Image (cartoon, rainbow, N blue to C red; front, side):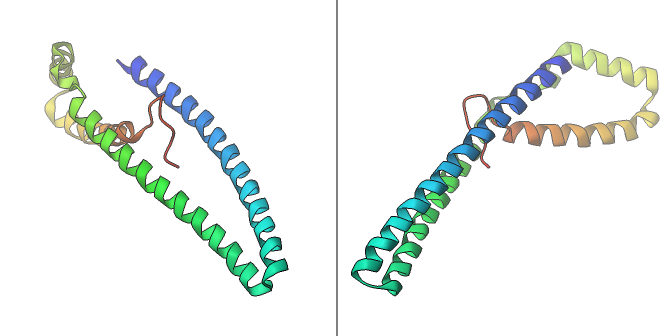
Length: 146
């Protein structure tokens, strides 16, 4: 049971690292390309109309690039949220497994209820963090949001 969680964590971490490095390289290439296009547009407008319209043209180019990046980010966030909600609805409960319930009852009998309450509180917090991380973690076929 825990081996599957560890394997999923290793796979998602490796995939996230590869996708993040690819995204960083693509972002850097886009920055260089945009800079050269803006410089070319600046020189072209500077020769025809002067320095003020040339600066405004450069600002307009970067503003359009910013709008495109913001729109793609918002669409990606919306898709990730929808996918996380769908995964939360379809995820089977671990408490449905009779072996897990039987093991839990044996632990309660062995330790005792009064000693088990603080342990359960800490375990519940850890399970909550794990569930929230698992719902937002990217799968192998999707890129990380940031």
